[in-house]
Image 1 (tube, helix red, strand yellow):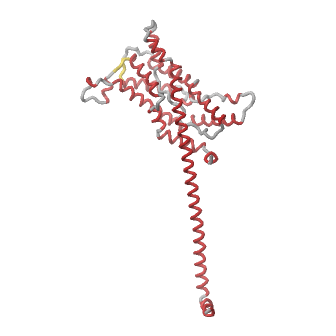
Image 2 (spheres, rainbow, N blue to C red):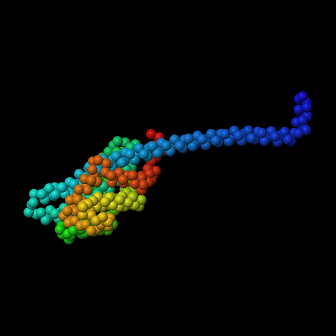
Image 3 (cartoon, helix red, strand yellow):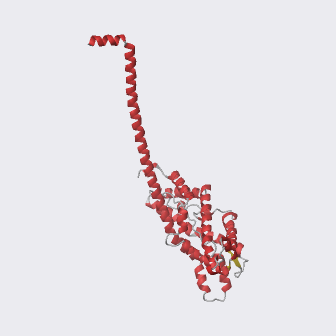
Length: 336
């Protein structure tokens, strides 16, 4: 039997060798393919886990940022009210003082531009930084509620004075005319002054930490780096676009709120009345001022503000937040 098999192999040696090579090649190719498939599967599983971890990390970071923003609203409201003293002036008017006209003039100026809820919409990643750095960083961004707000209010007051300084309190304005006034004020504040709005969110001056007589600690260096990165982010064209979008949405919401006060009573409203009928209703400036003044509490309420929630969920804001996250997050942070 073996002799016959050997003779067969000798007679068909080339075919046997070729067949063996093919079978062996198929076997090794199969093993190689199996190994590669396993490597691809493992890599895909690893990438999926990494992506899931990254997504969870980003969403957790965003929830923290959103809660930080919402928690700032009462402080922002108080800062605006304290600096403008509008409620005090309104209460003073009820006592019928001799300088009533002067107080009305002050109210006319300070009641404009109440929706100053343009804080930093995207918080840099600080969750994994040392507690000391977090405290220093958060203290630095409080600039918006202090000196930054003071400077911004001064700039807004000047713009309001230029736009409405000569308008008598008894003069009536329609909603469309009021919208035009706000547009002029916005143009002067946001464009004509030559100073970007982002400069009111973080101090331009050299960080105070750099002037410490005892030198900089490691945490100080990290804080300064975070602040410099934040300034670069605020100065970027992308942030300017997002800020402009948020401002446009905020003023649109403000006008929607004000429109409710420019509607005719239902009994006096024509059956065919539509949105254009708002242009036919006018209110004296003296009545418009308290209405606008009341928007401070509406926007910066302790309960979740619809406007602020809308801004935080805006697609452009979320996309910008994702870009910032991708830029500043590190693999090391994702492993923690």
